[in-house]
Length: 539
Image (cartoon, rainbow, N blue to C red; front, top):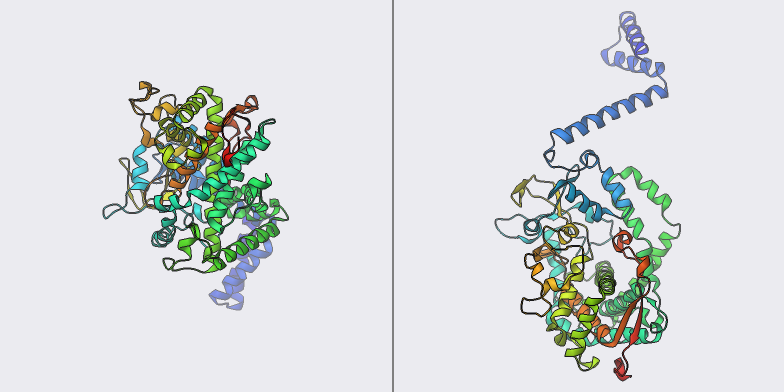
């Protein structure tokens, strides 16, 4: 190839003397002769060599001169996004991050421009502080998931997010939830009645049944009517469509880092994916339109009450559709995961279940007495909930933010760096919790409680932030606590529980995060207590 180029130049020199060509004509002549003298193979090899040299130079820069070069972490992560892609693809990202922190310490570089931090102070510095002397850490492009309309979760613009939150927040106040509580009880009682019917002789997959419960509750709070999953004892197609495509959303996160892979994603996506989503969107649109048309008929306060009020500046159908989908998924999927997790934890350590049942049964005389106010004072119940949330945060990965150029736990993080607090890691760290990977509700009890154990006196509870904190903390936190207290209290009061497939479950092995957090199937037999009044007045 080099010889051919030299020959072309020589030919050009002869031509300029004979034909008196202009410089531009000479330049074109040289290019033409070079093009004629090389092959496609030469071009491919040249491009490949140039690209390889570029990759090597870029990798050396990222390891030695990049602003994050001083932070430890996997070398593959420092020079590329391949470490992320591999870990994310297999659904173990949050656990792999935990392993990295055990190996490298509190600050770990996980990608060329990303840091994972595992300290309690980083929670406050990244998510919690907002004010005149503290710039906002805005959400990263991880949240750009191609939605037609942004939601309170995916909206990265700070001011637009404030506007959406201002409209939705009134539906999640204590006063609003108090008005919604009878509706929530209605579905919980139906759920328990179905367990009487289906789970007393043969065990049921409680992982699925908790989905039936939470989706019916949020369905009615959003659309004004439930999905009918409790009564039908099966998933609704709307729910299945979301869950069945979780792996596609997971792969899209990799494609956003390697855009060249988008065609591969389209090849592996199910052929009926487009039609499934069209059906899903059409059903949602019908329910939203129905809810809007009945705005004056529905007397209870629900999620749409304020979306349809003068508080909302955007009442377009597109905006309503996006918020409805987010509200249903956010209010149901995360809560059902918690219920499954805490049920397994209680059954895996039967002594904790016995203590919960003793507390509820000794302080509650009838299942009809169980409401949110009655459960607020049940200290062991509330400790069970806090410990369940610690061991299984519904979103275990770090919530990524972009540094404005600020100090995080004593270290300056350059502007533009993507940072997050590894909340799964901090919540499972022996640095912050004694016997961190074991279910110990007593760590949350006051010192004057009979079950208090001084072993946990040095626990740092701020290391567990299942609902995050700050202006972008989970809006549904109060609803989650309300549902959790009532459901667990009614189940503990009404039934004796038995785990029937415990030997098949390896909890930490079986958890996956692929678009959605997935848990192992937990099969439980619920035996009614003799002589105890059932819900709906049955015995």
